[in-house]
Length: 217
Image 1 (cartoon, rainbow, N blue to C red):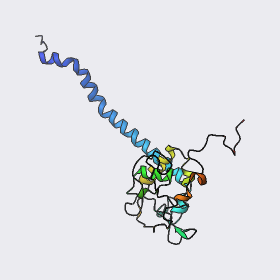
Image 2 (cartoon, rainbow, N blue to C red; image 1 turned 30 degrees about the vertical axis):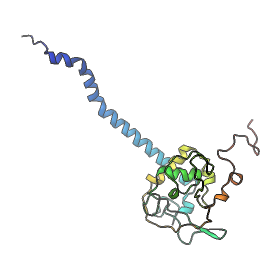
Image 3 (cartoon, one colour; image 1 turned 60 degrees about the horizontal axis):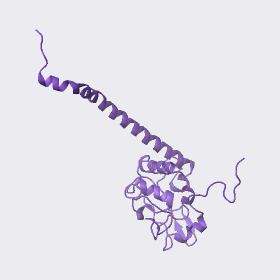
């Protein structure tokens, strides 16, 4: 005997292909997206690691051998390794993600701002900086700069992608090491008088070729 569709089955029939599509593809696509995100994040961290090694960050910021094989890698300087800047002593900080003694309590944005603008992460809000001139935009009127041995003046010309990669590696690619480094000494303005555009050159850099350069052939 022929069995005719009920009113309810007739109502649902147009939607069955949609239900089937969602049921079959949603979990898989979500997992695929998650895998892509994880892969992209790992590539960013790996890129940051290469930049940290290329730029010899461990030459100042490590307690032992400047290599990832050493447990003191990027955990900060020892008491015997200090920079003498005029009458002041400065010390390379712990860059591992330890919450108490390293970068653990700071965001990747604050690390980025330290590399791009030289601003001490512990004294600068977790915000996107809109200017490079003190008092303009949301750039601090009285900036607290990193001490002169830190070459952020050169790092600031790296691309956003490179600086974000370094930030990602320091925050997520290292094991936290509890090692407290004594605060660096410095003048009341925290080096602000040393980091003027007249002394450091402009940022961004002027287009090529600038005054000391010649154009390509």
